[in-house]
Structures are given as C-alpha cells and as structure tokens.
Amino acid sequence: MSLHLSQLVLDELASEVAAPAGAREHLEGCAQCSARLAAVRRDREASVKSFGYARTRARVAAERPARWRELLPFIVPVAAALLFLVIASLNPGKAADPRLKGGPTVDFLRAGQPVTEAKPGDVLELQLGAVGLRHAIVLSVDKDREVDVLFDGELPPGAVVTLPRRLEVTPGSVVVHAFLSEQPLDAKRAVSAMENEIRQYAGWPLEAPPPQSAGVTVASQRLYVKP
Ligand SMILES: [Zn+2]
Image (cartoon, rainbow, N blue to C red; front, top):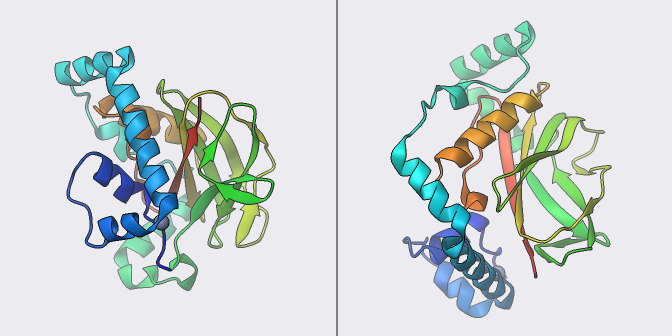
C-alpha cells in the first residue's frame, strides 16, 4: 500500500492543476484519499461563494504589499544562532543531518488516533513529529483568515511529541502549520509573516503557503470540520 496523497497533491487535483503521475491512480484505489479530495472540493466551492473570498480577491488585485517583511527570519536573533546559520549556508553538505531525512509532521489526534476530519465539539490533541528539533511554533489559520498561536516554546525530548494543549473543535475547517528549529523561534514574527502570506494569497486562505525562514522547517496539516 503506497502512502496517502499529500495535502499539496490534493490541492493540485482540486484546482485541476497537473498533479504528479500516479496521484489519480492512487485516488481510484483509495477511499480515504477520495473522501479527502471531496472535502477539499466542497470547501473550495463554499469559499468561492463566500463574501470574504470576493473581498480578498479585490484587495489582492488592488495592491500587492511589499514582500520584504516575510524575508525576515523569525528565529530569535541571538549571535550564536546567526553564526550557526552562516556556517550552515556556507556548508550545504552539512544539511544531510539524518534526523531531518524524514521531515517533520504534525497531526490532529482524537483518542490517540490521527484524524483529518472532525465535527464541532470534538476534543483533539496535536502531535508533532519533531525529528529532534527542539523549538516549535504551531499556528492555525481558519477560513476567516484568523491566525492563532496554538503552541510556542521548547519541546520535551522525543521524536514524537504530543502537545499539552487540548483543542475543542469549532465550526469551520482549519489548517495548522508547525515551524520547527534548533534555535528559539519568534512567535510574533511568525504570526506577522503568516498574516502577510494570507493577505497576498488570492485563493482559499487554508491553502496560503506557510512563510519560509532560514533554519526553520515546516509541517502542515488540514482538519476538515463537518458542519
Ligand atoms: Zn490514500
């Protein structure tokens, strides 16, 4: 059994952009991914019809703000961290850190099991596959373009970490972005960089890409909330 389709591939299929070879084949044989794609399509249609979407498109068409802000690193700028970044960028070969091979993950858990769909009132936990990185910020973005900080701080040791805060599901789908680094992260900067991305993104806000920052890796997960 091959791996399930990623969120990115589902978005490509839903927006009829060319998807990677094999994606459609997988879809035909996988009820779970078919259901996820149907949910993406439902949410997209709903968002296109909504007032917020039209308003945002108008705003994006009117003016595109300067992008310099999102280029700011949101690592807390301590000298040691900057030195580390300079050395890392001078030695790209060092990036082959075995802990980073798998890449980080973020999952919603209900009763200990990963879920991608939920209903209002469900109580969920968040689980990070932190690949040994010690610092994390987890942001959520909802259909109203609101950005919330769900976690900000140092992680307890372990490859897979369940975050202390429980989440009660409210109506409306959400996406979470987990930013992970060896260095302490600046939540304020991460939030403003995310808000900047959303402002400039013409489509459904849950598809706005998370901001990139040197030395920070990102994992994303979407939760479809059934009405
Ligand atoms: Zn699948």
